[in-house]
Image 1 (spheres, rainbow over the protein chains, first blue to last red):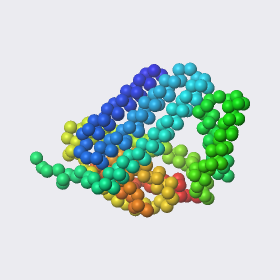
Image 2 (tube, chains in turn yellow, blue; image 1 turned 90 degrees about the vertical axis):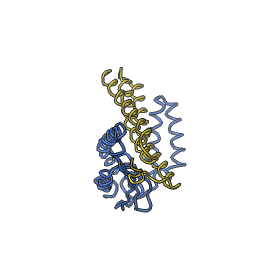
Image 3 (tube, rainbow over the protein chains, first blue to last red; image 1 turned 45 degrees about the vertical axis):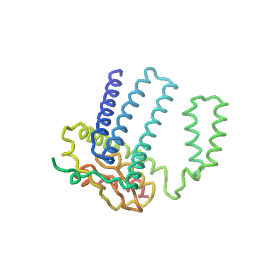
Image 4 (cartoon, chains in turn brown, yellow; image 1 turned 135 degrees about the vertical axis):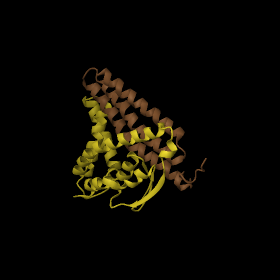
Length: 108
Length: 158
């Protein structure tokens, strides 16, 4: 049980790390949002799952309710994260941010 | 009918959040759920006709597949982000395609699913044209793909 919790949390942290590196390294606004919008979803899911399992050290109604609340957070993130990403991307598109392409990069 | 659905959802939510099952708290819950239902049932469920229960069940069956796609997507993004020659690997483009989906809720589900799956983000929807930013040619080629068919089965089959 504890081992599963540790593994899930660590995987989540690794994905968060990759996401952050992605935000810093990708060349433009749109591709950065690829990293921001997706990495977050899975890594927060993993970490919240770990919390849910950790919470079940003893099984009773109170713990079950807490687990359900964590599940609700997961559901919320699943709806909110892509919607927020979409809103930001659309705002960028609206104000005319040009996407980075291979051609716009001068050859070294 | 939608008043009953909304009330049940609200009341379930109340029990979940309060966690107390004595008479006092349950009565408060019934009163507030009824009030919220009265004020916002029109807002909460506005589309008539379709059988929501079966649509909801089908959507629940769709979730595991979506979760698998999200896993692929995160692995893909993580791989790209950590790749030393990242700029050779990516080739962003904006693609447009026309969707076969009719209802708003199905379009929203498709847009969010596209954002969550590998290498693509929905930029905007105009009527039934989707603008999608894809991070590589390979991701762009896969659009709209099997996701649209699955969603069409969920939301638009009676």
